[in-house]
Image (cartoon, rainbow, N blue to C red; front, side, top):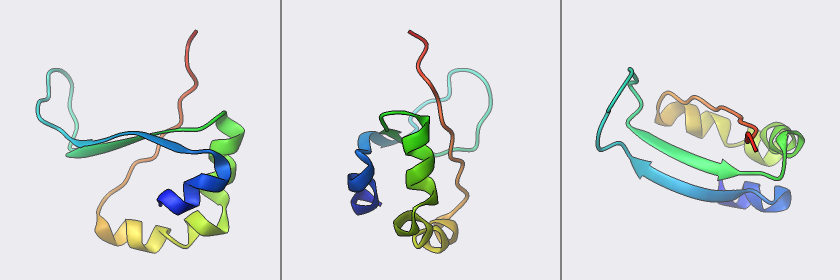
Length: 73
């Protein structure tokens, strides 16, 4: 995945495993946070052939949820 991020300026900010669930509900055991310049760049990365080729590997590894967020400034 790292190599697929480079052409789009994607930067992994955080990768880790859950150590506590303080409120709410989730089955997620791990998380990765990736920063992109904007939503259009995120979408371009997601639709890129480089990332699309990785989807079968991603899907065989487990359940994945991918979310996009815009910062509230």
